[in-house]
Length: 169
Image 1 (cartoon, rainbow, N blue to C red):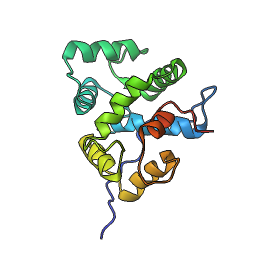
Image 2 (image 1 turned 60 degrees about the vertical axis):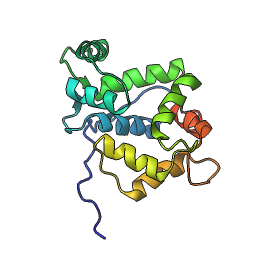
Image 3 (image 1 turned 45 degrees about the horizontal axis):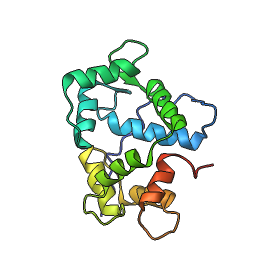
Image 4 (image 1 turned 135 degrees about the vertical axis):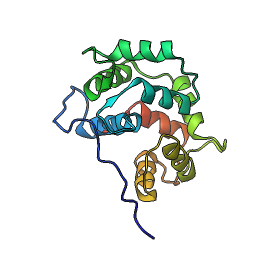
C-alpha cells in the first residue's frame, strides 16, 4: 500500500508566533485548523475558501455574510485572512470561552452517524469534505490526543475539552 505523498506542508508562515497563554502546541493546532480552510495553500483564507468551509459545516454562506466575516477579521485590508489575523480571532474566542452548546453543534457535524462519538471514519469523512489529505495514522493521532479514556473515539466531553483547550499544557 502506497503512502499518500500529496500531504501539503503548512501554508501559514513558519515564522515564530507567540501569544501569551498559548503553548507552541496550541498555536500549531490553530495553524492546522487555518490550513484546513486555506485549501489552495496560499497562506491566506479568501472569500471562496471561507464560503466552502462554511458550507461544508452546514451553514448557508451568502456573499454578504462571507465578506462581512472577512472584513471583521481582516486588519490589513487585503480582503483575505492571514494566519496572524486568524490566530487573533481564535485566541480571542478561546479566552471568551465557547459555550457547550456551540461546541456540541460542531461535534454533531463530525458525528454524522449519530453514535454519540467521533470515530476514525467520521474524521476521514470530514477531512475529505474539506479537501485535506490525511493518512489514517495522522487521523488516529488526532483521536489519541483528544481521547482521555483511551476508548479509540472522542466523546462530546473530550471534544469540548480539546476545543476549549482546557486539557493541554
